Image (cartoon, rainbow, N blue to C red; front, side):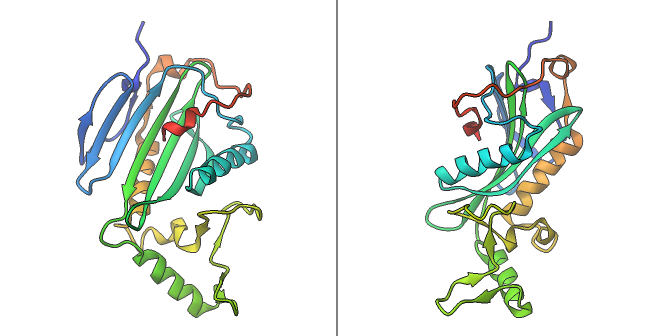
Amino acid sequence: MMLISAESLRFDLRGLRMTNTGSALREWTSAAGDTLGVHFVDGPPDLAADLSDLAGLRRFYRERAAADGYGLIECDSVRVAGCAAARVVLKLPQQPGGLSYLASLVLPFRDFGFLVKAHCIERTTAGVREAQVLQHAMASGQVTQSEHGDLLGWARDPYGDAAASGLLWNLSDARAHDARFPDHALSRARSLLDRVEATLRIDDNVRAAPAFVHRGGKRPWWRRW
C-alpha cells in the first residue's frame, strides 16, 4: 500500500528550486526568494468548522489571525483536484517594516491533512502598492479623510464583520490590483497558489481517504502555516 506523505501531492514546479525534501515537508524557493512548501500532518485536523460552513471557517481564521497579529485577506472553501479544501491568504508585519504574505491551501481529511503554503515578503517596493491605490481612491472619492485624520472607506474586514479589528484588509489587497503590481509580494503569493490549484495532482489513496468532519476541539493544527 502506498504511504501517504508530503510526496502525495504534486504540482507545476517550473522555476522553483527544491530546498527541503522529506515525508512531512517538501519545500521550494523561487528566484524572487519566495518559498512554497507542502506540509503533511499525520493526525486528525482540528479546524474549528467544516469546510462547508464558510461563515464558521472565516470566523475561525479571522479570530486566529487577529490573535497572532495577522490580517485576513481571503478565506474560501474550494475544490482542488476533486478534494475539498480551504484557500486562505493572510498578511503579517515584518521587521523592521513592510509586510509578508501567506497564501495557503488547507486540505484536511479525517485522519491527516496537508498544508500547501506560499510565503512571500515585501522587499524594496514595500508600501508602493498601498500608496498608489490609496492616492487613486482618494482622488476618486472612494476614500475620504475625517477631521481627525482617519481614512474612511480604506480598511475593513473583507467579509463585512464590523467587529473585526487589528490588521485589516484594505483596498490595495484586492485581487483586481495584482495585474498592475505583478511583482508585489501579495501578487506573487496569489500567483503561486493559483498555480498549485490549477496543476495539483493528488494520489488516489489520499483522494479515497475518509473526509474531514469537524468534531470540536481547540488544537491549532492550522497554525503550521
